[in-house]
Length: 167
Image 1 (tube, rainbow, N blue to C red):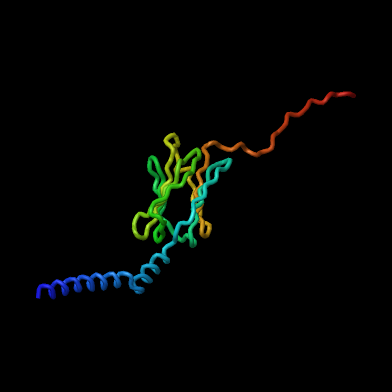
Image 2: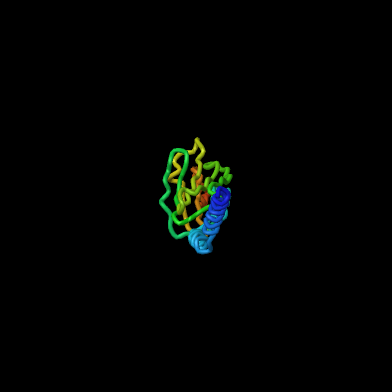
């Protein structure tokens, strides 16, 4: 009788574990999760370009970027949240050495919000006035302009030469 109960207990544990594991990978659950992840806009790449009059950071997404939360300016960083977006793995760091920022951090803030943070160098001030943000389809372009004013391109007026009067 003891042996019968032992065998019954082992079989019960085996079947219970097998049913639970089989249910965890059911196609219905897997496709529902996959559909949810596919509905989110994934961040593919971050491109960084130095320009003569500033620094451009291009965020490349899988789909066109429709909306984002207005940038929040902190003492050492600028933060932008993108609802219904994701990044995989959940944290990535991109080097972006320029006069204004040292790196770009992209993190998955919650299940449906991607947070991008630009780390500002300590000596940079007045970043709010030099920060520009433009959406171009799948790309979101962030521009940090230099503080120096560019030389004006107006025409120089040359001094007139005195003419000699020979009458």
